[in-house]
Image 1: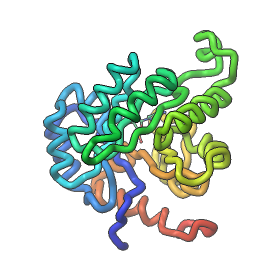
Image 2 (image 1 turned 45 degrees about the horizontal axis):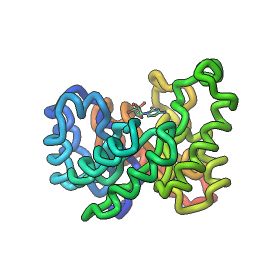
Image 3 (image 1 turned 135 degrees about the vertical axis):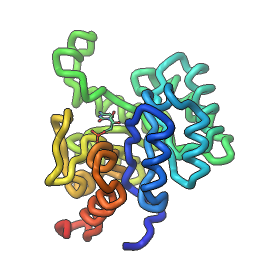
Length: 241
Ligand code: C5P
């Protein structure tokens, strides 16, 4: 398999501390995957770990889902960009002024990270969204917020593979769709409910696939990553090998 210049697989480092994260990173080739640092790991291990992962050669998605007033989010994005990360994210629910401020603030960064938005959290049910006072169904709201993110100059959105087809159809190529909830055909679903296989997610239009436990809990994470990558190495209209 050739080295991929723009690895599509983002491995979610959902581990409690720096030691576990660095041990995993050491086993995962930087040419084949990026790494996602979320709230648990960031709160435990901080910016120093992020910098170590970046220095180790991995592209890092700092998944802190900023949501605050525009100035605060913009400055948080500037601080994240200084760490040299590849991707950061904000909540679209912060509104277009917040998203625009974030996008403009990182424009001058020496290596501008990609900036994507979380739309409607997939953990929210139809009832939850109604209870919050929104008059639209979650899927309609997600599409509306994705359009706001695109119009605010963001690079893409985080979405489920189930939503990817509609979003790709609406926004065309060039808008990044980052999809969690990915499970190889033979893997346990864990606590995910609406899962898609890696190949199905890519066929639906996903740009990047966030995959955690099927790789991080495998006896051989590098081999699990390679096996998933192999499922993506097929012509766009063909079937996975
Ligand atoms: O282990 P697993 O593959 O389920 O990990 C998926 C990762 O994607 C986790 O870090 C999880 O927090 C994140 N995520 C998700 N669903 C969303 C948004 C993020 O599973 N809607």
